[in-house]
Amino acid sequence: MKILGIGNAIVDVICKVEENFISQNNLTKGTMKLIFDKNEFQSMLSNLKIEKTISGGSVANSIVGLSQLKNKVGFIGKVSDDELGRKYEDGLKSENVEYFYSKKKEELPTGTCLILVTPDSERTMCTFLGTAGKINENDVNTDVIKQSEIIFLEGYLWDEGEPKKAFEKAINNANKVAMSLSDQFCVDRHKTHFLDLVKNKLDITFANEQEMMSLIDAKDFNEVIDFGRNLKKLLVITRGDKGAISILNNEIAENDIEKNLSIKDLTGAGDLFAAGFLHGYLNNFSPIECLNKGREMSSKVIQQIGARL
Image (cartoon, rainbow, N blue to C red; front, top):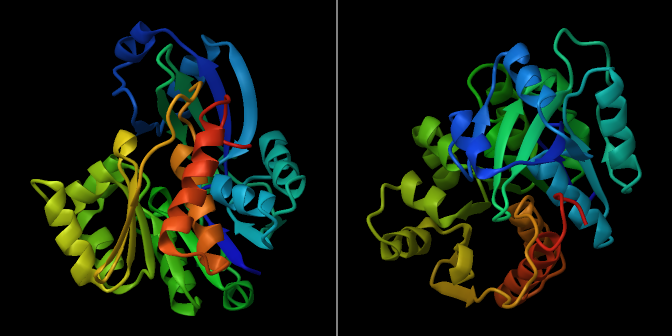
């Protein structure tokens, strides 16, 4: 196995909404909100017209991208044996992703993410984690981890208790560990733990500029560059319309964004960027070639609806 993803197994439900829907539901545009009450989630969904339903989850999206680039990949994520859980598994298998999880009937249903796309193509997410957030160390197969060149984790999955134990078991048995910080709210919630992971446990960290600034309480981006230089691990940061940068010791590579794209939906841009970059990394591309492959993949995905190519 080239790369094994461990993440939230979530079914993406994509809906187009008007701007006022975001404010009426007290959401912060462009972020992800966790919803813990199943009824609250269902009532929000009941007022919407569903455009598309896709097997999603941040790391799973990256893993599918890596599979489409012809890498041998696998995924571990917890679903229930319900209709969405079966759809989820079928969705991965159809993309040649090996799914290392045996589903059974769980107390909570399979996780769902409501992706609300406003007319400006920005996406705001409401996630009901369901059973995905209950992943535990028994769900993580040590042999599969040891046989993978890299494991890829997501910050969304990290939580005190069972998920943390699953994370630690995976990291302790891995050859190399990559992780995406996922979301600024995630970083703010788990700052001390994430900082420890970035400094001491991860070989590759993916983040966007806001997440990284928040993680180290930086006032400007030069502080992030200094942090990256001293880290002695690979740090990859996407910077919106400023392109992306990778830092390893004193080797810094930067690229720009592609211009004149017909952007339809920003969902999955970071996930597919990570897929392209990791593809380059696994195949010994230079840092700038890795960044460019990331850009190529993310540029494709934002010109369509949904986080899968």
